[in-house]
Amino acid sequence: QQQVKQSPQSLIVQKGGISIINCAYENTAFDYFPWYQQFPGKGPALLIAIRPDVSEKKEGRFTISFNKSAKQFSLHIMDSQPGDSATYFCAARRNTGTASKLTFGTGTRLQVTL
Amino acid sequence: DAGVIQSPRHEVTEMGQEVTLRCKPISGHNSLFWYRQTMMRGLELLIYFNNNVPIDDSGMPEDRFSAKMPNASFSTLKIQPSEPRDSAVYFCASTPDRGGGANVLTFGAGSRLTVL
Image (cartoon, rainbow over all chains, first blue to last red; front, side):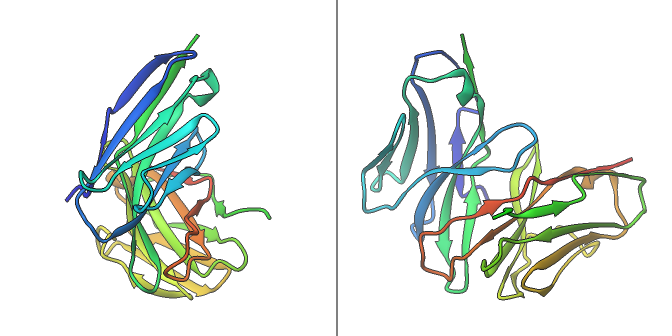
């Protein structure tokens, strides 16, 4: 069962443009929503995260928008740069009481062209 | 901090052979996770440990897969016997999360396994 659905699968954006990646979840027990960035040959690295009691979080050029009622959240990359070219994963965390379990989306491969 | 350390980085083996992947979590992190990444299925959680105890192994695909965490600084993922469909990148990740904090996973660089 795919609990976190991510789209699009791939995205090509021109330098300076806005990249938008969308995710939707089903389980209302999720309590934390991080985004990870992965470069080729590397492990995913935490980029930005949001709690469901906040509708938006901004860190530099990266913004998460969160819609709790719709169970959707999205990543916006403003002024996209070639160095942003990577695979982006949304995730949702469920607190099990003994550890936090992350469920990942399927990933979006972003290419920023000159 | 050296981060999460995985070895080997690359492993090529033949079908039927035993494969052992190793992970050293970040010191002080008490939860450790093993993920598998493939093009078809993305990032899949295989198993996770809390304080060296396996908590949830429901993601382990078959009995051919086993994982251990003998102490707080070392974990292994073993595949015996290996099959071509096990070819993937295996990631280890750790977190100091004790079940309610905002800390999220820190991943290692991964072990790329190719089974011929």
